[in-house]
Image 1 (cartoon, rainbow, N blue to C red):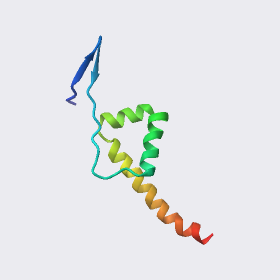
Image 2 (image 1 turned 45 degrees about the vertical axis):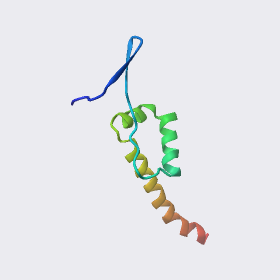
Image 3 (image 1 turned 60 degrees about the vertical axis):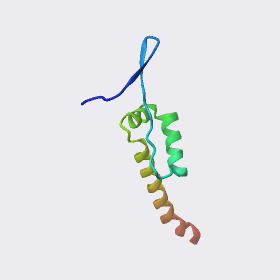
Length: 80
C-alpha cells in the first residue's frame, strides 16, 4: 500500500498534512451529532475515517439512515 501523504516538520516530529475533503451535500443534524460523538468518544475510529477519506461518506450514510427511520416513525408517533 502506497502512502501519498506529505509531512511538515514541527520540531523533531513530522506531522502529516491532512485535509478533510467535504462533499457537495450538506451534513444534517444527525451527521453532525455522529461527527461530534466520534470526535469525543471514538477518536481512533475518527482518525481512521479521516485518514481513509471516508468520514464524509460515513456521515452522509448516517444522516440518510436517520432520516429514513424518522420518516418511518413519524406516522406511528402521530397516531399515538
